Figure 1 (cartoon, rainbow, N blue to C red):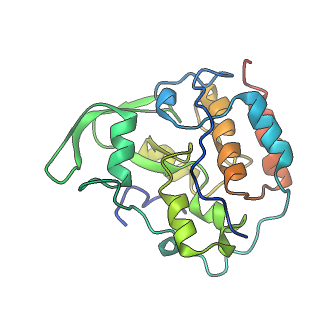
Figure 2 (figure 1 turned 135 degrees about the horizontal axis):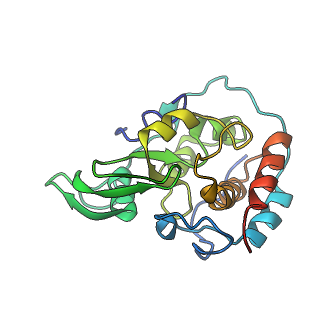
Figure 3 (figure 1 turned 45 degrees about the vertical axis):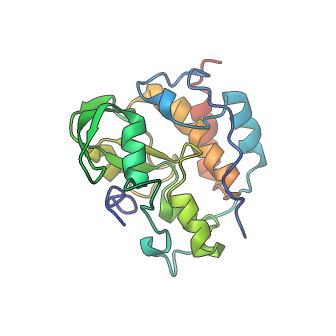
Length: 218
């Protein structure tokens, strides 16, 4: 995938992640397995308010972009890094080796409702390249590191390799999860991340996010 293919490998100023919106896994649809583990998903009503407040602008330049400018994965305690933390959070029956790597377990990819028993890929809800061209180019590397390893907001989740590759660095106007039942949660998550980090949206992106929020049941 253009931006996220290696997301499961080691590896303006935004606000520092810290304050977390109360998780609402059941609000407004998006009931696929695994949703309850995603932190900070706002309600559909809150997402609509945040979407209205986002700056609408054309994509910025990709000049100077490199995945190395978003260092990941970082240590999250002991020998475990961000990847291991997400796999533990999103999986069930996860067993780790002495280096904290997941060696067994079960994961459900909410993007396509597929279940896996090998360690899944990780996806950044808002891809790194997308963040770069919507504001992150102006951040410091430490700020980009926080974004790439954010466990406080709905920015990281375990998904199938196929959907990880097909999504690439595309926005919701270009790519949406094959499982339409997840569209509501996907839109709410995308909007929360963009709002938290004060990233802009394109007009087409905003229109599609509005349509996806319309799939929410409450």
